[in-house]
Image 1 (cartoon, rainbow, N blue to C red):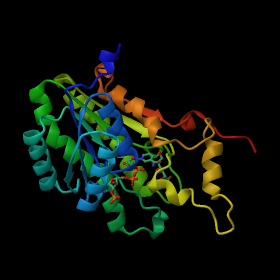
Image 2 (cartoon, rainbow, N blue to C red; image 1 turned 90 degrees about the vertical axis):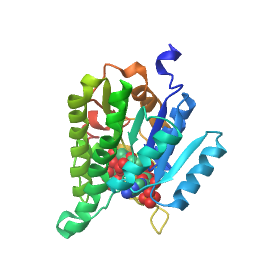
Image 3 (cartoon, rainbow, N blue to C red; image 1 turned 120 degrees about the vertical axis):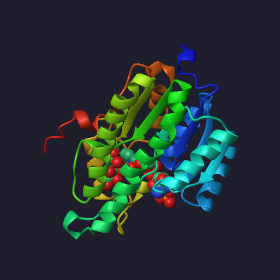
Length: 264
Ligand code: NAP
Ligand code: GCO
């Protein structure tokens, strides 16, 4: 059975993976046997990532690349293919959020979020699909969100992008499934990372942030997710164990989407 989940001999590219969810997913893929390549937006972050991978004994190849820049992405992909090998697994993880009420949000900020969270997965996927076709297989995992399904105050751009990413996932599956490429999404629930740190910060008097208690009450598991909660699902969707699963979004949310919420 372990052969079915093995990533031995596979090369994986995980975007924005110096820390947070991307780092944990990359670590899991390395533990399953894959060779890890990753990028981040500047050299400091890449160095931080390289050190973190070295600290856990995982070999990783890191590049500076802004995933919204198509030329830079194409160059990164050809350097990885030349120096490490053809990419078998792509995890579109890099993302940003801006929490601003919609009527106060500038069109420029809205576009920036769409650019990183939706246009970039298109750009990076487009860069790797031709060699996946030549290889005769490929796995693309897009990191979606609760906001691929739900809305809430202040996250209009993020929800629009992550909802779009769900449909990009289904479209890649539809368009390239015939080439033995599986494109699926992981929809994390509320995961404790720097991105969600402002939602968990204690107030000046030491009491918990109201959003913290809100999320715990909305999650049947009764807790925030940890980045380790995403490791098993990522290995599953990157491995042969999921070869007939395509265009699916696997929500890893402690049950949030199943639950109507506690009665008052
Ligand atoms: P994070 O802690 O903010 O990490 C995101 C990474 O992407 C950072 O290293 C970031 O660099 C990098 N990045 C941002 N823009 C980039 C660009 N243009 N080019 C290259 N790299 C870029 O976020 P996270 O919480 O680990 O989230 C990772 C992914 O999961 C995101 O797509 C996020 O939307 C999604 N997600 C998160 C949660 C959650 O609860 N945390 C839940 C559902 C989905 P900087 O440090 O410079 O920003
Ligand atoms: C927010 C959060 C979320 C999470 C995540 C949920 O402000 O509501 O940041 O959007 O990051 O994507 O799945």
